Length: 186
Image (cartoon, rainbow, N blue to C red; front, side, top):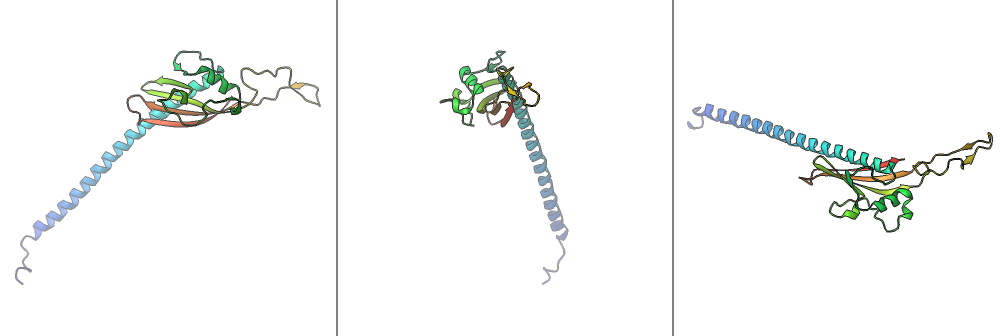
């Protein structure tokens, strides 16, 4: 009984408990700081990949405005004839051309264009075209709908709609990537 009522060593046990609590709090703070740095780095790499995707998307818009004729040699087109076919008509006129929304960088027929932007390679692909009449090859000038009230010829502009898939990935680390789906009206 006398041993149980002895208060010798109580301070040491109390200090050990406080030390354990402070160690746990320090470890938790270190874990939060390191995890925050990791997530910040991941977000930075993802934002960079998204910006590369946007740059590739702009290059594809330029290619569409040129009706599939590349105006520079910055991008690579494995099959330029397929791109012109995809730009010229709806998906039913494409024949056996690939219209799947997946892009595999190892298979050159799974994308229409690739461009290197910094340390990223961006792949783009047209997966659907809805027919319109407002492209560069517009043939409706002076031969359009007549407005019955005024007797004037009015061209009704119906834009082409292109569904475009974009994949950008770092050339040094393929896990750093972003994917975009874009509906472009031209």
